[in-house]
Image (cartoon, rainbow, N blue to C red):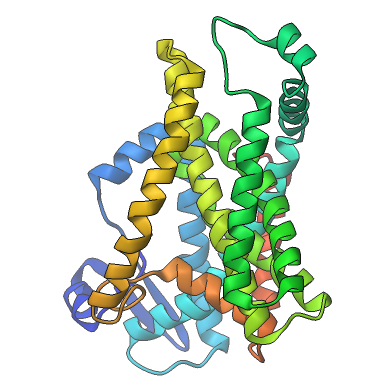
Length: 343
């Protein structure tokens, strides 16, 4: 199911290959498109996941759009109104569904999390390394993993303090980031192991992180710009962590299939992430500074980032989240899970 194009030029040029009609107050706008890349992704994720994605499009465009257009008044032409309804209302139904999906995924991997943590701490002791280490396929020692993790936590805390200039909110934001990143890393790795990088639910995990931080930070008394910056900082780190974890998990899985050394792979993965971080930050800053409108503007649209920001603002400003739409999406997801139609 195809989303309306962003620009006025695209809307006028695409008018002939979609179905658009107004019946009374109800708007109908949907169409189809073909893509070799999407066909390839469909082969990878197989029918169950592809069918769920298609059902999401049907629910959003065939069912939700006409229903919401009857009760919500919008201005502009038919296509502009359809896009506005999608942007400001329909996608919150998807947010509710993604939140439920994130927690369901956490429940599915709880056993894996326990085993991994037990193995990690077991391998930090000399006795544990002697009894459990497979010298034909060595890994980086648990002590190194914990040391690098502590270093990353300190660096992230410094970033949070730079954004908020508040020591207390930095401590709370760092704790929320660490807890969210820990669990959602497990979800990302589990999902990548099942269906590959192409269908890792990073957006759902990031939105869940925004909701978690948006609930706990105001309860601790952190509101306004300080709370907003901390919430978006938490979401950014969780998003990057989940993406990186899924990618590395896929690489390690491939290395295992071809007989690569886990330790050498792990060393190069750490080096690769470090080098990429040093290159990516100035590249993004250049795009922001030298592109008209910056990131999120007409030339570099960032719809997911705008969604995350709008959800975060609802917790730290007078903007109100459409809780009824979030609840609708969550209810749909619960029904699908109850019917056994989840991943």
